[in-house]
Length: 222
Image (tube, rainbow, N blue to C red; front, side, top):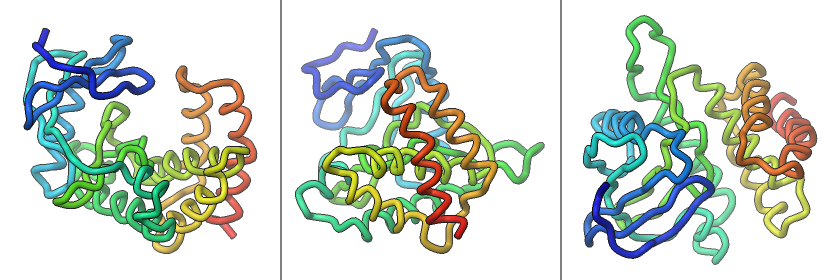
């Protein structure tokens, strides 16, 4: 087990600890992730110019050593007014397009691309060197339409809820789905199915999926 310093933050399934000024450790609490595979994907897209953090191999399925980043998340920057919703939506769309421009890893599936499958404002850090996309734990290879579907459903669930961020999330979703957008009917359907099956989702969050899909259809397939 990697030696660590203080706890820097916790998410739904993992904790992040300080190592030194340059590196942090993310440790999976539940044991169902694959840190080695995640690190390999991050290294691959980074080799092709995509803004993912640097990684250091550990050989562990539950521990991932990552470049220590400074700066707010895109969500934090939205919250304090440093970034507008139109700019944030355009940035998310650009990050999806750039990711899907990375050459696929599977020669037997030339149409497949690396998918992030959890690209939303809290998984983009705005560093002094530009945006960095974090949390690649859901990544797989597949059709880009699914990636667009996952990002859209995540935002739409907030937009149709009663939280204070509902209004900004609606505007952000509209900006994300502006042309050019690679969302597909099958990608949206599969994204909703996966969100419903996600064990970290609460019952109220699952109940928002129907209205969320309706909103996405109004914006993307009109």
